[in-house]
Length: 541
View (cartoon, rainbow, N blue to C red):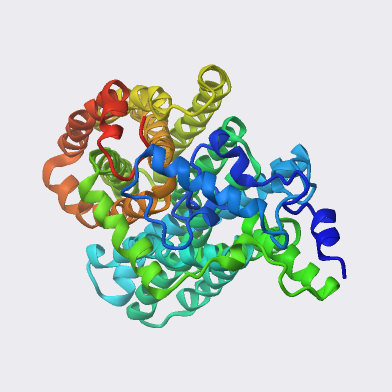
């Protein structure tokens, strides 16, 4: 067998080989894959090999390491890479309609898992009465699910490194659907709480993997728009949960059908995704190609870069468990942006308890109607997604073309705008909550709340990814862990806070907290490049 001919025919190194690393300067985060909550690029995970410690290297050392890596590839006739820049198997070359069809399916899957996170909140009172516990204890059904969102990525991150995108995504999604069954038939509170937690752990698979999948087949500008779809689904789901859940709980179906409906939706969209969503991980696709060629040619030396990677327990411990927390306390950009995002994430889930207090208890609305004001937040989320999509396609695209690369701080203008809009919405909600004032302005305030939350959240994630590039996976893991604890913890004190302080002052406290965090994106927009130069985890500005 002519090995050289085989290598040449299949896009190998000796004859004008093209590979992902050649396009590294055009990628927004070239290096490790982003398998935390969202937004990653798997094709560059293979650059971290042979224990090269890129953390302590400067930009020149990193460029030298990449150059040496390319030179090594060019002299390996058995290394399988893409068959030129137009290789049809490369997800970047998929048809545009196919990309957006896949994006919609992934968005629907995301909607279901986030819907599940909040739909149980509508059953809090019923479950508390049924099992003889306080409402604060019953709220754990929501909190534990969201806490699972923080724990899960520690599993799905290494999983997507080992097995690609599709296997861990649909394995986690299937287990999430299955865990709805014991919740629906549970005869004691302990079963509900345990299964809600593990349901959240498995439900985090789409949140941890889909963002990376989008980066597998979209470039920086289109990715920004696609991620808006993903982020909108991430927030529309938990907002739709109380709206749908209230009517389910109050109907003849009863609270248990909040779990059955979730399982039915998960099964439907999961089957749709299993059929139409292909593997998008670049290393995994090349690994499968290499395995096929080994079988066809009987040349057992043929391999891909993924075959060279040895993901040891030590690597998993250092990269996925320890490094995120080291970065969180050593990196001012990561710490402040994460605290800000944790605050708004906590506020979102706190409102699933606060809105019923304001509209059901204070205004005396019926349980089903008291969830309809969430539509205001829903409209705001859609408005935020539209705003970021427009900015990405116009201002951000022009800056990218001008500089030839992504400037992380160019992600921040929408976040700065959102930091002003959110407290306006919170104070507006607070001081129109008096039952003597018509409900209309209070519901309208939700538009500003949802608008601000989405722009802060989405652009905060984009900024973290663009800043830390090689180590964005660890940065997002730290971010996800902390804000998931905020999202799970805030609802636990919602009853005490809003019943003790009243709706007006309780919401005002949240507004003041957001005002305190307003300078963070402004400061990083001005001084971010200077701060990045002092970081050992971020490439030099």
